[in-house]
Image (cartoon, rainbow, N blue to C red; front, side):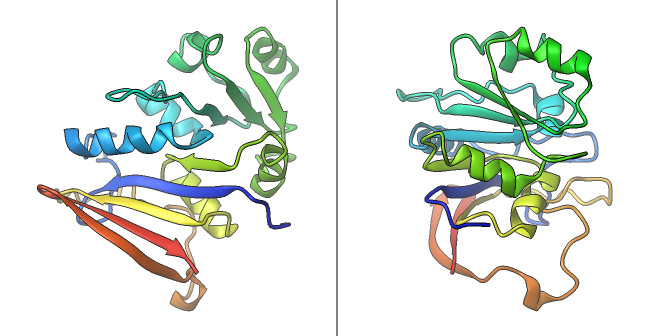
Length: 218
C-alpha cells in the first residue's frame, strides 16, 4: 500500500492475560479515569473505527463524552451491510458523520436499506472488506488520524496488513482466562516472533490500578 499521511492508532483495554472480553462478552475493563482519557483521545482524532462484532456486542455510540470535544467520524466495518436500523449508530447518523464500509458481496436488499439512512457507504473488497483499499479511500476524505477500537479480529487485520502507527493499551488488574474469551489480537497470528511488527515503548502512565502503555511502530 502506498504510504498515506493517515496516523492509525490501535486502542484497547486488556486484562493481565491479554483478553479484551470474557467468554460471555463482558468487556468492562476500564476505570473511570481511563474512560476520561479515552474520550480525550477520541476528541483529538478525525475518525473512529470498529468492526461488526463490536457493534453487535456493545451497540456503542462512539461519541465523545465525559469531556467537551468534537465527535469523530464513525466508521463501521460491515461487509454484508447487516447493521440494524435500531442500532445507536444508525439512530444518530443524522447528527454524526457515519461511514459504513461494505464489500461487493453485500446484497441488493441490504445496500438499498443502507442508502435510506444518512450514512456514507464505501464499497471495498470482493467477498470481505479489503482493508488496504479502504484506507486509500479514507485518506482522500481529510481523515488524518484514525482511532481503531475494534475487537481481536479487526486488530489482527490492521496488524497483519501493517496498517497502524501506534498502539495504546490499558492494562487492567483482572485475570480472565478461557479459550473462548477474546484476545487483543485474534486471527491466525504470526508463525514466528520475527514476523511481529517492531514496536518501541513511548510511555507508561499509571492510573491507580491501571497502566496505560503506549507503543509506536518503528
